[in-house]
Length: 230
Figure 1 (cartoon, rainbow, N blue to C red):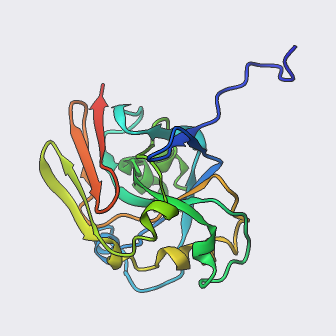
Figure 2 (figure 1 turned 120 degrees about the vertical axis):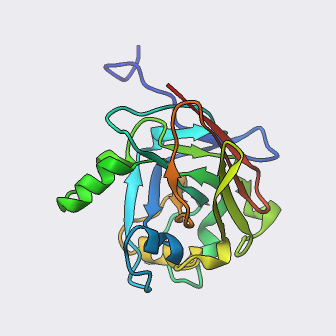
């Protein structure tokens, strides 16, 4: 007899590159406006104000990419290509110097956004949840362990739609480095193994519609390909 009153769902998990094992996902944190050019295109000052965060649900991942249904209640869904950090060690109030000790690995991810809903919420001073949290909102590639690739601190990051380059940046352009993001986030939440951190997107975000093919690349990681379906 089951311990649950309804059938339990499978735990969300991401493939690990070079392994048959998977990385179980506990929680997804995202950093807002962490590239200067993207902050400007969103109408914000890119100065180094403290980073801010929003979240996505673990079951919103799309492991390996693939087909992504166009979400409801939006006419303006945008792509945002990002470096994703996978946390492998618990910690709170982590110092910048100790941040790397808590990282299991890195992946490429896409923060899909219902931009019209996000902007409407922003104008009303309301939370961004409806703009950022929806089914299939967090496509992600395989996680590459630190033991295999080290800690990428530079490298080209790009996203193309139907073969046309839309976003292009470099990991070195992060306003807040991965280590600084971990340190700041850990003052707000106890980070746990299984947590993912989407670290921000470069400029060039824009809409995707049913039928569009998106391809993201980060130097040193695998690529991700998503197809938006009706």
